[in-house]
Amino acid sequence: MAAGALAVIGVRPLDAETSPLPVGFVEPLTATAMSVTYALPATDGVMIDRRHEVMLTRWQQSIYAFALACPHQKTALRWIEKDTRFQCPKHKSKYQPDGTFISGKATRGMDRHALRREGETIVVDTAVLHRQDANPSGWSASTVRLTDG
Image (tube, rainbow, N blue to C red; front, side):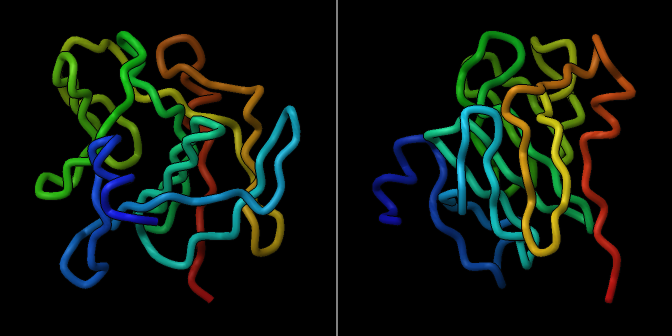
């Protein structure tokens, strides 16, 4: 996708060799009213699906599917490459790549969709969104752990 389109939401394409977590757009392989299916990410990075408002993130051998918006006031989050974190442009809430809250006006981590691995795909349940404060066990479980080999 063009760099101009990425700039609209505050990200730009990055060179995987120079950035700790490259950012780009992704289209699902399939989509229904309740779920979207993506190819299993081969490397660490943040993939944004604007149509379904999902940020698919692979980081440190885990995959997460986040809501696109900050949990504080629903502003679209941005990836800050130099700091390796997400940030809300409105009130500057900051989050680790796994969605854990760092600081700012928000009071919880980024909202996570339920997801599962099916072979070489990731299925995101867009009807299920876990809030860290309301359902900490569901939030923690909304992770696909990858293993070597």
